[in-house]
Image (cartoon, rainbow, N blue to C red; front, side):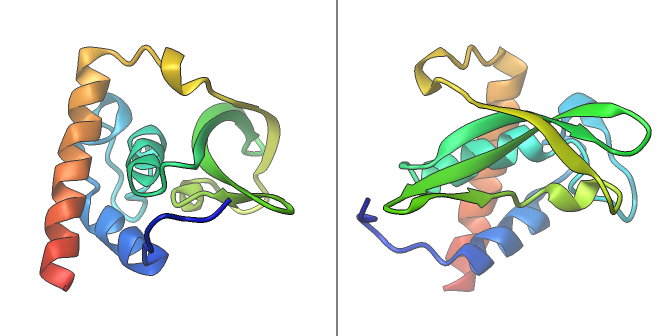
Length: 133
C-alpha cells in the first residue's frame, strides 16, 4: 500500500515524547522517568493522523505481575503489517502481548475527555514538528 506522503517517524516520535504530559495521559497519570505511561491511546490516534493507512490495535500486555490494556498501530504493507508502538517503553523488560485486536475506526466511541486529550497531543505534536523544520 503506497504512502501518499512521507513522514519522518523519528521526528514524529521525538515530537510525541516532547508533547506527552499528565494532561494527555489516561487518568492524568504521570511518572518521572516513564513519560510514556498512559500515553498509548492518544499516541496511537496521533500516529493514525500522520499515517492514515495505519490501524489502531488494542491488546493486553502481561508485565510479569498483571495484565494491562495497551494500544499501538499496525501499518499494512505488501508482506503483512508493521507494528508501530511508540509507547512500549512504559512496560518493564520481559513484558509480552497476550491478546490483540484491530479496532474498527468507525466505532471507536471516544469520550469527550479522550477526544480532548488526543486533540491536545496532536496540537502539540504539530507545533513541535513545525519548529523542527
